[in-house]
Image (tube, rainbow, N blue to C red; front, side, top):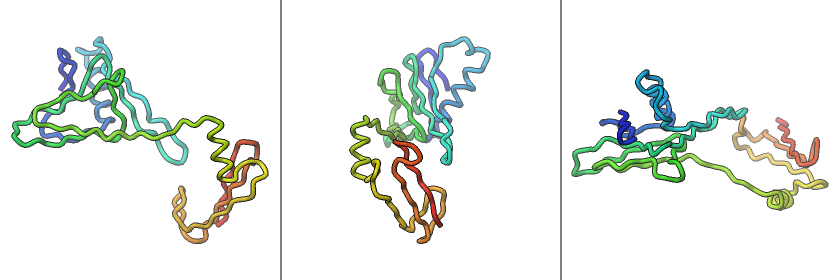
Amino acid sequence: MFHHDTSIIEIVAPYLSMTVQEIADAVAFHRAQPDYIDESEILQAEGKIPIPGIGNSLIVITMLDGWRIQFEDRPGPTYVQAEIGSGVLVGTGGTNPIAPGAFVSVNISQAVSGVSLQQPKIDEIHQMMGLLAGSPLIESATGRSSPSGISGTEINMTFTANSPSPGEITLERDP
């Protein structure tokens, strides 16, 4: 339910779980209705970027203009646990994207990962791993599942430093 006067998206009972994608879809459907087409934006959605061999990245939504999400009030006296997951949900400027509800505790399962490394740190890691020019060949036969799902003790992964061009690492699999 969308409350434009208070900028609240209310998730009605009995629902206690919602994904970030479901929120984005509900907002898109709501905004497509004739009565709300000229209203200001509620959220900004990004993500779903194709990652070769893996699938799509998760969706990230930023609640705009003070919009927040609230699970419908419960009668109590016992609290219920609600959850929003499978993506990243943030408010503009770091504000809380969740509005409090009576006798509802909300857990946001954020899915974030990543690192920003500067070139000196990357060189240090490559040096530690022996992956700089002239480093010896590194081989591994672990028997663990590979990213492509192949498993067994016959897997042999070979990492060749700086091949075919400087700064690149080639991965070859010899069954």
